[in-house]
Amino acid sequence: MAIRLPTELGIIKKELPSRFFIAGLDEVGRGPLAGPVVAGCTFLKWESFSPQELKKFFRSLSRLGITDSKKISAEKRVKILNHFGIYPSKINANQFYSILKKGDLELGFSIYEMGPSEIDKINILNASLKSMALAFKKCRKEKNFGAVLVDGNKIPNSLGENLSARAIIGGDSKSLLIAFASIIAKEYRDNLMKKMDLLYPQYNFQKNMGYGTQTHILAIQNFGITPIHRKSFKGVKEVFLSESLG
Image 1 (spheres, one colour):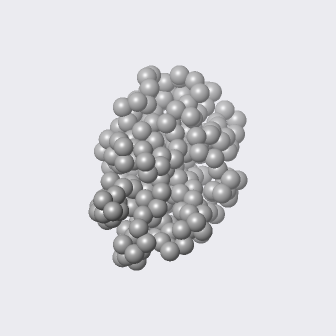
Image 2: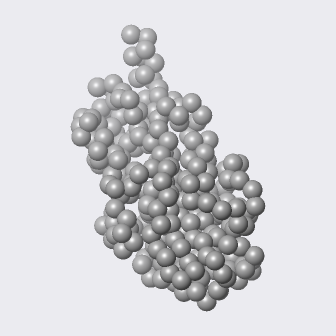
Image 3: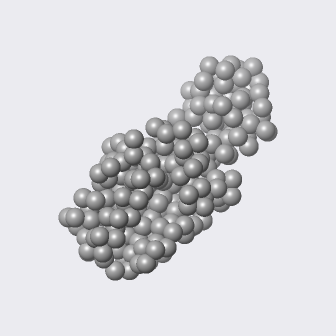
């Protein structure tokens, strides 16, 4: 079910017009044994404050059925993205895309992809937070004051100054911008893992997306690990150490 009373409406009512943007941040891929963690940022900015136009915009997002990416089918996610002319196979990481301009409103997004070696180096929590911060920085061109909504219970410590950030547990079911970011990030990552399946077909990445399914773990035990496996994760680490010891 789409988000009908998103967090953004409360911000519009209580805290604007002192703000000039609202951003939603989310990540996908914290749990898998292989592949990157991917963060998404959706960024809505405006030149002049119009509560009516902002409310109308968020209602239009809700009518599209935007909600937590895990709660809707891949077909529905793709349909939502195609509505905005977004095609996951054509998205480049660390690039800002403007996808809608209507009057003083502009909606855009960016994603950031952090690979297994960096995840192993700084751990998955720090990798997730850092990725969200970097996706946000690619969207924010000016230093105007605004609101940043982050899915989860932690806020990245390097978002920058002159903003108000809040962590929202279950944010992808409460904020339309967070949910939209999660949809973009998930479809980007799923598309990437399908490409990895062509390189490493024995691991069935096209279906498990790098998660530790029984067949994936058996494949690791039978065939060893690949360059896209996370060597610090249980189920991979043991095989990696065994291979290292020879």
